[in-house]
Amino acid sequence: LPKARLKELDIESLPSRYRATDTPFYNPVDAKEVENSGISPKDRAYTIRKVIDPNTKPSDLARPGHVMLLGAHADGLVGRNGHTEAVVELCQLAGLYPGGLLCELVSDSGEMMNAKELKALARRFEIPVITVGALAEFARSLLPKKSPS
View 1 (cartoon, rainbow, N blue to C red):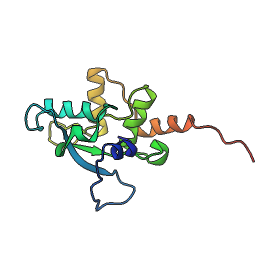
View 2 (tube, rainbow, N blue to C red):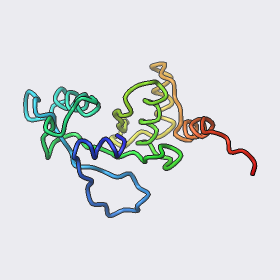
View 3 (spheres, rainbow, N blue to C red):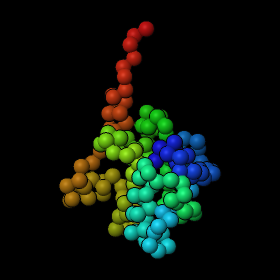
View 4 (cartoon, rainbow, N blue to C red):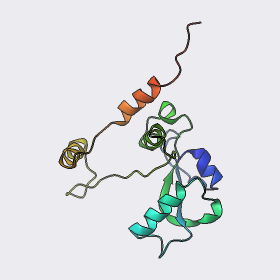
């Protein structure tokens, strides 16, 4: 989510032991109206829908929860070339609310899928693949061109 939206929802960032340029994590939340404990896929999906609903208020969310939140750079992919910013950028380009879900896919070995495995999966299910780099390049191409001084 954009950091401004996380601030509106009164969700605080978690302390980081990493570099300032790394993805900022925020306190996990649950929607208060989940059916069970919040950990089930159904409860998490409901929470995600609430988090990206522009009508959701801070009082609609319980803390701590089971859905980890990431904060996107205010300048999008121009400000930080990361997966979090790519999700927000894709949503904006599609005319959708600027927030979405990202996850890593696990291979049969139990490790995170590498690019070769992801491309094979995409071919199998006919899913288009784009890279963060290509999306960032496209986003930069949409910026107003500076006129010569």
